Image (cartoon, rainbow, N blue to C red; front, side, top):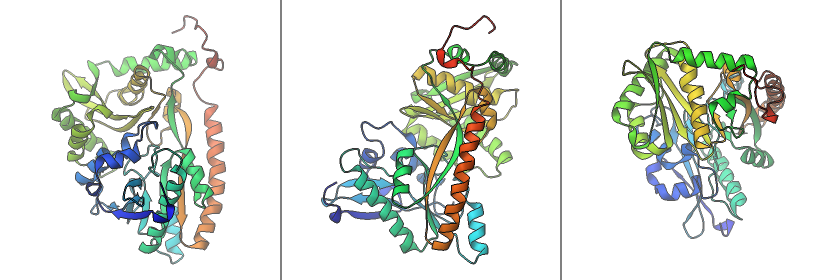
Length: 399
């Protein structure tokens, strides 16, 4: 990066203020696995569509690191927030405790991808000799911004483990949680994956898939230039119907989907279910360099196991076909375990201004990490795999 003393930290309130190519050089540099969510295309679509804005409680305060020559040496997506919605790393208890003690928890700073519980880099820097120094400067800059705003805290969520460890080394509080991810063990087909499962689980999954396709239901993959506004119209109807029933107020606007289709269609997999030729349900996924990320689901007709088929089994088939290492199927859902998705850690790091509150949260997080470790170990014992699955032996004819 050059002389660290000459580094300049800037804050921008819109992705439109920075050239997409320069942002993406830091967000998805050559040699790192591609992550669609930190791309300029995805983040700017959230802003320009009105999904993540000041009005919705996500005021952009993105951090840029410039070297002595004015070149962008790093960046960090960050937002000033007056609530904790759309984050999936829950701190409502922290907020209540701090405010009950006379403090003011909001506003706070949040470094994440809005509405997206998917692991990815947050300290965005090109690889090389100066990477760690650039990351340290970014986090120091973010903490200084927190102090100048007089906010209670800074939260950096769904980090890769390497960045999480580094932030712990420089003094941030460390938090873990768990999701369910499907891991590709070199499978050649969906049946190859099934061969790793116990006989009972194989039969269960086959029956679920068969029932999902009953009643004339057909499922297709739509990606790249095949995506049209008609697809997005249908999916938005699903999204709004299901989202309104489950959460009350869905986060994403209709324009967001059009912008994604316009700017990054090759990164999108839309699993669409039809009956009698009419679209009835869909699952939206994003394609990374190593992973398929399941993001949103919706349906206007309800058929047994169609949710599992579109969100989990079709994702596995696609990942196998593309040679992807894993499927990250989003937040929550222990029902995923029986379908081949195993517990996997997620990571976040936190800076808290008030020293007494920071000490209390630190003690809580130490206990919480132990509980997460125990839960992952316990849930792993219920994974549906054969005990000898690692041997990849030929199966008997009980398919």
